[in-house]
Image (tube, rainbow over all chains, first blue to last red; front, side, top):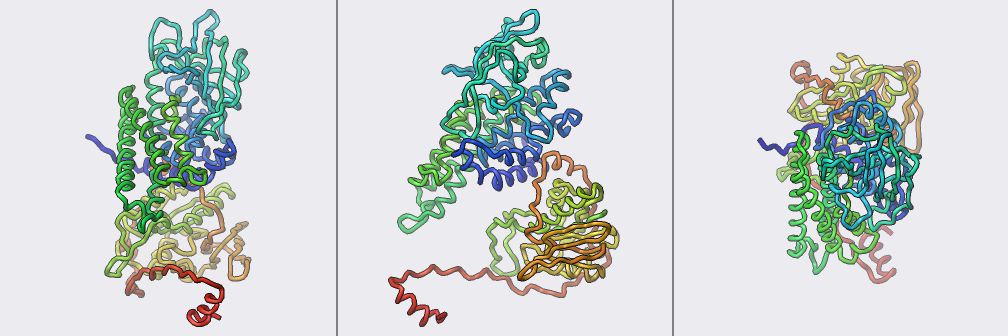
Length: 369
Length: 249
């Protein structure tokens, strides 16, 4: 049976994270974008909500909850509704923790999950994207080769959030093991200070300016215990789908923010003696924005539910990501248009949302729900 | 220490309220319901008192329909230990509410009742005072600071023209003002734990109280729409109009 009703807990997560996003994140977003930094106090407050460590077992510093991709999608939609750059910052530790939680060995969970928990916001991150025009998460050019003492890791990464302060990284690479595609995509745990790990300059991006991201160059030798889940497990497809669902949900959040802002503006702004929302050119645009946001959310939830049932959900997650990314961009663009000249100036947030939404078509971050 | 926090469900302050055409109440379709903001402050203060003392129990109570469970769950997710729902679907006036609460207090025997100074829907600002009177307990309304040591309570009250500090023994009733604290957000683990916490339901009939309303709402009316301002062309004209038309100078 198909049921689109969220559980009572999921509704409460939505309410709470939504209230936090409206009351705390949104008011800080413009200043964060202008100053290219996020107040540590805000991040710390968000961390206290338990996002990113709820499903980690209590003995490893989490809260022992049950991991649900759908609940995660509901939460990150609300966070991104507040601000995308701040949402990505808040969820960065989960980029490191959730794959280890899900596919790591017991030993890896015991050793590394405590790095991603605790009362202070933990600086750990993941590196997936590569600085190439033909970046493909199923054919990474960061290569891992098995040697007698473990593995060598060689390549370059970009858009690694919080890398400047990170104590540990989850680095995705293609293991040269004869397999192809997802079956040879592996994650490696690299600690800060590893010989051959070099950090580039902070990136200067069009949007998401508040999120500190960096390039990484890798020429490393790692021990045999560094490969997440061991050599024989295959998890690339599932982790990528989780990432796509999270990004889809965030895209829905950004689109919802832009839609609501431009709708409210259109109801207040008068032209030719009536609010512009009463003009069909604007009204039709708003109606279409609303309907595409609903459609994006359904696609994201469908993929999330499929993942929660244990599948890889490659098709569902890819559809959701593709659709939600383009909807976010289109809705943010329409919002700028509805505000007219006001949409183009930095006093209103829609131009910032447009710049941020542009990232969805480019980002293929890792599993962060 | 046992702390009892009575809460009320009210429309979200951000909701646009519409009066029913027949004037008997407000339109409740599509209204988002929340915990009365002053009561949320009371929950937060109770949790802080418990945290400061290192032990204790925070019990929520509300009087309303079964669906009010939702607001109790939110309070439990913030950290309250358990909740009581006195199930009632008939209109009750403030004295009736105070009587029900007095009965709950008699059963629960809390050391402190802490609640919002008023609900933001009808703004009555009566229940806390009435409850203290029915119980014969000390009361401190409009609290902006609460300190407890050795069953002596010190409260700073916001009164017209300044602050008043009062001291009294427990048990007592405190009602909270806006500046007492800033309520926390429920955390994810808090939300997940709230599901397992107890909400005890008591049908209001079982309390055997006289709850017949002494107060009847005759009609509700929306405030008149504000008229648009008028532009005047000179200071002289303004002064002239203030004198002759508005008659304020």
